[in-house]
Length: 460
Image (cartoon, rainbow, N blue to C red):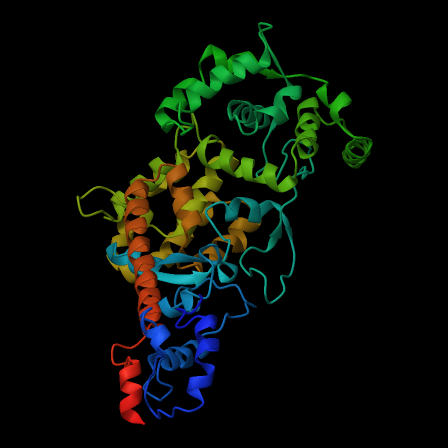
């Protein structure tokens, strides 16, 4: 932030000769030419508010980040004064999950994004399937996996880090076709049953999934689309991969088939082409995450939102209006519900367990421990053996987690997002107020003396 300008350079030069003959200890002074402009020289003494603000600023330096945090109480806070040192995109606000789960109160903390964990509700899904690695001290200790979008299980039946079968891949590609942001990447893979142009059908599908202003329609509306003729009209080309896959990808496919002593399905090979059709694997992963949150649960008998609503009712977690508030459940339980539906194809067991969980209320102090026992039964692989316990260490609700809650239409998610935004606005206003105070402290003091030429003659 630039300091308030006190005098012009031209004024300083013009003042030079007269200043040499005038001594005004502990006083401010202004030459006649400067006095007309209302500019003043601030006295250079210990009471100078500008010097005091400079001393205060010295105590606040941009911190070097070397660790990622998962606990609300451990992650360093950025104070209102410190916030002025950082661009807005470098910090964010998090919620104390322990307090929020206990009484619904939103306690915010302003933190650096680089020090904030990326663990979220999809973590268990990827944790179970992806390769482990040992993170460095500055990396996220809870996200201990490397996402491999070309991953194929030993049987060749399930593909990708969320382990889709051929039906799942077709549903994923249809979502990509309906989404105008990703449509161009999958059009070469698709055809229609009735011979209509693929792009025409894809645009029809877009209107059924998204509103005119690009917002996603509610899940009940999207549920109904699954059985519509326009949705069923889109299918994958059997041999699109033969013309689309690079030589490198074809070698990879051949190696995978040799390992399994069997041919991979054309759908599998078409899925592998997506890793080359997208501009980057990260872009494809982002789309896969969107699909897993908002589209994979469609037409499932037990959706994550239904499972978590039942669990919230069982645990008597409500908002101020008395409605079930599933956002007050620990993130690991929501993550387990997503994983269960992904791997089992439905959420019936999880829904059954959630409805029978009233017994947890008998000892609320051990709620987390008992919930972990229940939800581990919903999760497969490494997600069951240690993923749930790892995610249970997280007591932070991040903006990304709130966004995920909204995408799966978790009961209470919209209200949480609104209340969070209100608190963020209040916190940002404190930063603005602090900046205003700093500017005022650097402005000329009202006690500064403004002396005219007449005053100089009296002091000689």
